[in-house]
Amino acid sequence: MKRTLCLLLSVTLLWGGIASTASAAMISTGEAVHAQDRQAQLNTVQRQLARADLQDAMISLGVDPADAQLRVTALSDAELASLSARLDELPAGGSILALVGAVFVVLLILDLTGVTNVFKNI
Image (cartoon, rainbow, N blue to C red; front, side, top):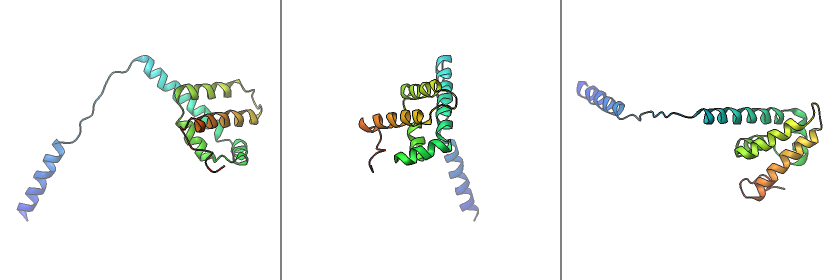
């Protein structure tokens, strides 16, 4: 029993010493601001996509709202900035169809370029 326990403790100690190490690196202020901007844009778009009236409109167009949320997170920085800017241009309480249209156009472009496969069932 002692021998088994000693062997187990030895293996555990050796394995603990081989554990992966963490690495850290300095990032520039520009990179930190860029990451915060992207997260803010992503939150804005996802908050709009979570609205019930927009989800009803997407469902009527044959787009699953969960797929749309996943596709928005996969957008590049330029595509996300463009979509977020279009959302900011809409008047408060404005046309929901414009937002659905913007999301639809972005999803269509991504589908045509082969990045996504949203409209495979349509």
